[in-house]
Length: 138
Image 1 (cartoon, one colour):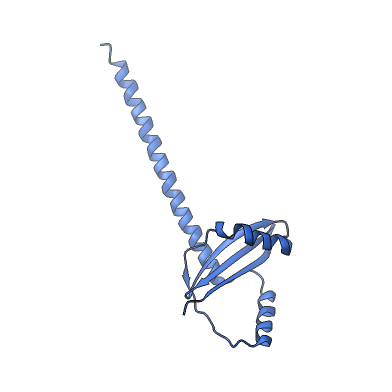
Image 2 (cartoon, helix red, strand yellow):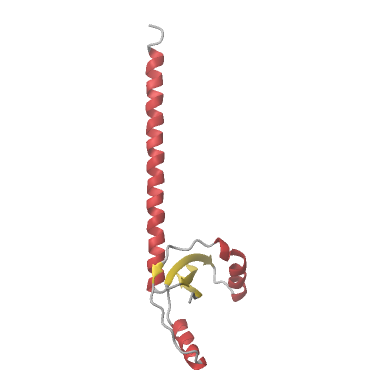
């Protein structure tokens, strides 16, 4: 049975307000981080979800164990109150975001290395061409 669960946590991470979207599908958690800037109103958050959710870049999925609890309204209310009291983002979502950050860093390093190598090759070719031009007339 496939279950998909989405959760948004908005918290103040000095000096900005940050939102972390957690998406749990088939026991795997992915996360995306959004910086809001000033404290967002509920309507602004809702508008962001409606307009920009499809543009979010989620991190690679991380295995997570899901707990299945009874569908008791009092228990649900207790768990919501507990989650609201818990500040910050969950450790699994932090791991997912860290994994995404590491992948972006390796891609960026590889890209800059390629650009640096291309620039070195271009400079080498330019030096060779100048050297050839010096000896053309003799």
